[in-house]
Length: 197
Image 1 (cartoon, one colour):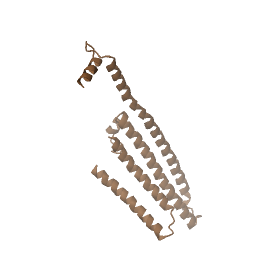
Image 2 (tube, rainbow, N blue to C red):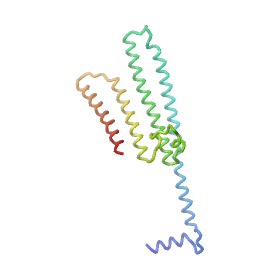
Image 3 (cartoon, rainbow, N blue to C red):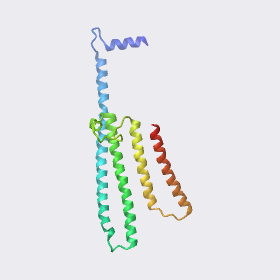
Image 4 (cartoon, helix red, strand yellow):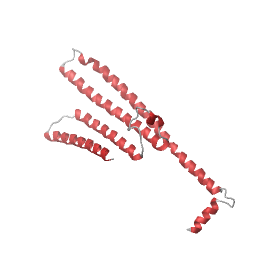
C-alpha cells in the first residue's frame, strides 16, 4: 500500500515539484467530466419546448370550448341538448385541467433539472413571486414535487372516466365508492408525507 502511494507520488511529481503528464491528464479528464453535465441542457430545453406546446394546445382547446359555450343560453336548445352540451363541456374542462397540469409537470421538470445539474436560477430566488414549487434543492425534492403533480393528474383522469361511467349494478357503485376513497387516501398520504419531510 505504501509502495503504491510512493509510485503514484513519483508519477505525479517530478524532482522539481512540477506536475507531470499523469496529473495533467487527470485534471483534463476531471474538467471534461464536470462539463459533461451540460448534456442535461438537451432535456431542459426539450421539456421546456414541449411544455410550451402543451400549454398552447390546451389554451386553443379552452378557447374552442368557450366558443361552443356561447350557444348554451340559446332558447332554441331543448333540455336534452342543453344537458348534453353541459356534459361535453365538463369533460372538456377536465381535459383542459389535465393538460395544464401536464404542462406544469414538464415545466417543473425542466426547471428542476437545470437547478440540479447546471446552475441555481438567481432570478427565481430574487423574485418576489418566487414559490417553493419552482425551487429544487435535490433530486428527491424534484421527485416529490413531480409525484404530487402526477398524482393530481391521475385524479383528474379518474374523475374524467367517472363522468362517462354508467352504473348498472350496485357492485359498480361500490367500485366507484372504493375508487373515490382511494383517491382521498392518496391525497391524505401525500399531505402527511409533506408534513413529515
